[in-house]
Length: 234
Image (cartoon, rainbow, N blue to C red; front, top):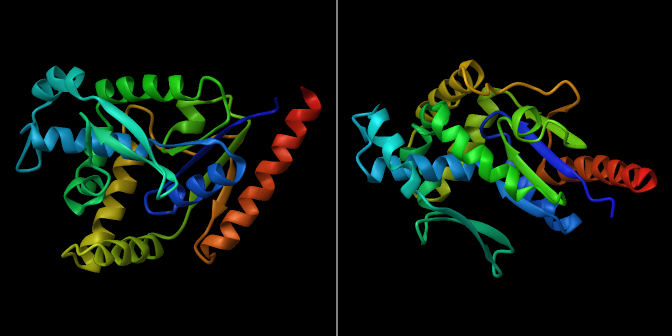
């Protein structure tokens, strides 16, 4: 009783997934990383030659979409769920620059969004969920009781992403990552289908000058207040 839906939206590399994951763990809620779902479809498109020389064969991809089976499987050792594509753990591969460069272009395809939004709504049917992405508070769960919109300057986001990729052994430059961040911002904000925008009732959360712990403590505090209010109104 009193469980709510928490929607965390925002720009790429703002740490949405980290905060959402920690928040879900603290509240004993289900965590869903919708970005991982779009990344998995991007990987699916690459593996099935639906993308050649960065050009998308839309007809081929749409025809193959029913064969893309996505599943989150909980990893006890890591204490969070990982993305599986057609029975294979693709968690590491979907975080690569190869996928990052194309995911925003795949995410604008209406047929892809329709498939994944339907899955996301089903996952959150019983509330008690923390979901992060680009259109959670505006499209997937417009009635979510608690909405956060995360942002930070492009330079800071690129720096965070660059350090993450380097730590994983990726051969990238900071300039390449910054270019990707800016391109994704533009595509996400200007796509025709479910563009990235802040929901009117979302709390804007600029974490440019905040560490992970401070971010978590503030958002966790907000969430507890909303949950307490929900219990009183139940």
